Image (cartoon, rainbow, N blue to C red; front, top):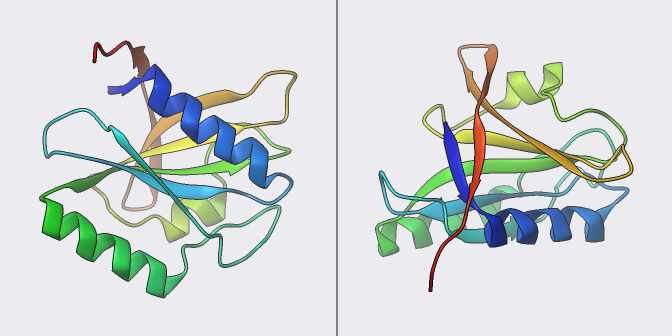
Amino acid sequence: MLAIPGGVLGAVVDHCRAQAPVEACGIIAGWPGGLPTRVIPMANAEASEHLWRFHREQQLAVWRELDERGEDPLVIWHSHPTSPARPSRADIQLAGEPGAHHLIVSLAGAEPTARAWRIRDGNAVEDELTVVTMEV
């Protein structure tokens, strides 16, 4: 199960809408074993409506920052501006971080939909997505 704070999911959806029609992408960082709490939008190196990939230099810088802060990339996310929130063949083939959840936000309907996936060894299995409230 992927539990994600509503405000965090909202920030991801907002970024996806802002980048449309290009697929948006990024990560949600957090403490190992904790909730994903810090949204880090990343540039789509492909600048494509049907494919995404992190810029290598930006990814390296973000992963270094995560190491320095003691955080993990708990969620890898991207959008599907015109298709359902399920992994494409390319998404499955290019999936890294086997310990991370993969979140896909579809903008194809009247309202955005988000679904969580675990992608390992060429297989995608849907995971329960739960939106939680966090008190500050």
